[in-house]
Length: 540
Image 1 (cartoon, rainbow, N blue to C red):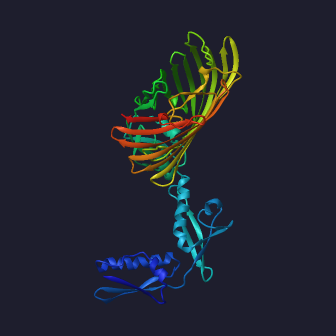
Image 2: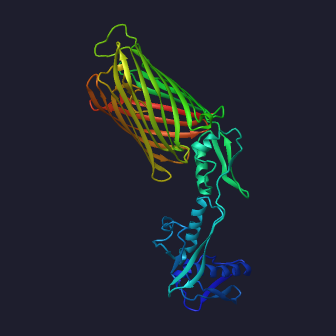
Image 3: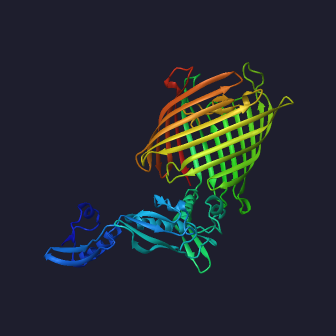
């Protein structure tokens, strides 16, 4: 059964093509329903006088719907009260705005009114209604009308309720997601804040938040489910020993215990070994939002041992403060204590016993994204240490500064580019080997042994072009560039590495395979410089 559309004048083909309706119908009732709605579509397109005049049967398979179109109006001049809407809001729906009126295309009126209504809802007026009244003809193609705002009671959030995870640490609602009692109710903002909670790792959202509106109060309900978020991360590396030319193993083990006590706490235990008697042990504990405040505590211990040369211990304690849901700062204390393990001095190697005490401060920003393989879209941290080093009973002022920045540029669903820069500098009048920064390896510049490069200053740029076959498998390029200085040897050198990587998400965890060849500007290319790194990250 077909519908033929006619009018008192010839209907432009472009208008017919723009009308949304089925081409055929199963019965008369469905055909008549569409014929009635077409008049409304015509009115929205500016034919405000249009109406269905007749619906006649042409033959057994066709009906003719005859409409009166009338004049088409292209624009509408809308007068408004300055107390109802800001001009900045009106410019988001109209291109021409004055202190008294704004002009819309008639076909955009419905969308504009919905947007204006949403502006009020976002500011706590969930029951506001916006409509046009007193619509009259102004000219041959222009209408005019009065904008009417019927304001409901402005709503604020009076209480928060968590369903599904009764022991959820509610300080995360207030400080991490930014949901606060007393704030204006905005459904759009609550949905965005719900997504922020979904990125925590130890919790997942079951559905969008809901609101219960009582006569004088508004309660917001979040539906959450606790997730296991403990992390085991292991890397096994293969390389060729430059002296023996034999295969050498290196790698690390990382264990993270997250939110097992339902306080949002974290305990990290990390151990690294590079196959050359170089070992690094680290334990870190954090407790956020103490006494339901934006303040938290953190403590950390690091022990680094290089063969029989030296051992360095770092102790750190800090107070953190959540500035916004995406950023935090900290201030604290950091101490170093290093011991020379050599029985006799070795020429050219400056290793001494020393202690160092520093005030530390820093700030960090993190933006999440909905991606299981790459959950962090942007990250920035800046850290500073100011203090003194005591060496052979002599004190000397020192400063350390570090910055880490990375960002993912999502080209489309499958393709993305990852860029990261890490830079650190030690400012001092004199330097010793066991106080320098140590870098190299899979977490800094790939294609080099872990912590094999000593530097008073270094900067590394990591780049990856990533291609995701699906939500579980991806490959990527490796192009890393680095520069470092060692003031002890007056050394300045550039580093390069090239390679390829693979990531595979399975039930066992995220398996990563990286193959990279690292070289310096003073070193010829050689296959023996190739490093293979295998890591498996499992959650339990």
